[in-house]
Length: 239
Ligand code: OAD
Image (cartoon, rainbow, N blue to C red; front, side, top):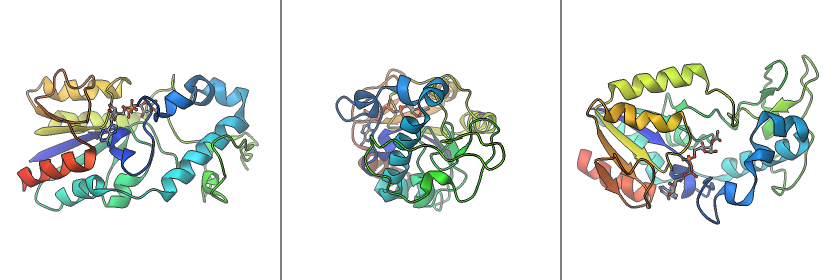
């Protein structure tokens, strides 16, 4: 069977990577996206933004994939065609062994020049980690090609999703026979429209999330548990 996973921040929560909208622990409960996650914010205060994304990159580097990430990767070796579409900017699916992961919101590890798009290797976001506290301001390094500041490779509010990723995600959702939606509030568009795209074709949608989300209203089945337990229970059935 063709199985598609659509994952959000809740997928990485058990690895110690904070979600965005959970009360108290979510990043947007503690930080203002208007100051950190738009191009205007970066242009206004590049050191604040670069330091914050360096902190997040360091946090992800220290995190390890959990049983849920590993379970999805293992499923691909058990006769099913598995695709992973993620809103996450971490690399935990890849480190668990999943291949061809589609990143709708970019990656923490794909910095580029804000002005000309130039990239360098190694990625400067990883230079001399860990950078310290979330509050540490750090001036982004200058681009060797044009002198502009480096920016993180994530999609900010107001920006279009990477076209290739969006097209590939649509293709996955149009071809899958089962959709498993893990750990997303289903509030951020256009990613949030993807589950409905499969549902309209009559595809079975399973949601794994300890609490209700915008996906819950049309999902066929709800596993009200954390990602690792939910994926394990699903795999037990599929094997
Ligand atoms: P949210 O923070 O909006 O939602 C996280 C979801 O994960 C919530 O529904 C939680 O109930 C659920 N959750 C929490 N812990 C969980 C666990 N252990 N197992 C399973 N689920 C759990 O995160 P996203 O929906 O991913 O955008 O947010 C979408 C986008 O908004 C993000 O990609 C980010 C943010 O602004 C960009 O960075 C562009």
